[in-house]
Image (tube, rainbow, N blue to C red):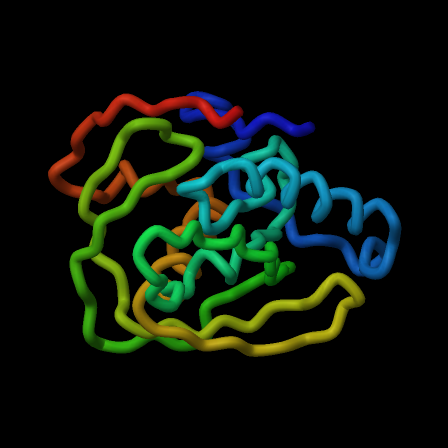
Length: 177
């Protein structure tokens, strides 16, 4: 399984390269996406992951959509079922529209373990991207989705949230098993 690289790794500070046209629809690109899923899935706090975070310098990120939705309330004493992983894949994404309104949001990062802070993010963001087969699409979102879009595209541009977040605090992190 691919390791999630940590702050200090040069790939996190480089601008990621666009996925070349000839890679769309190939087993090689599918393998990169699978490696990203395998790295993200065990990370309980992880909602998204950019390719540079597994040392792959391409403009790709994935989102664990099932982790962005508030689960329905459960009866007392009932153990919630583990959600079925739902991965959204964004290749060569670009922000095409943002709201004027911005909010301060709590943020962390799997590549900056144990550091959390407050980032200022747009309340709504629309991105244009491509799917694994090369199909183009646009997706917009507000709240957590908008925050994820900005955070992950920052990764693709060599920016970590700690570069602009305020009120950074360190909270010890238990490694995933």
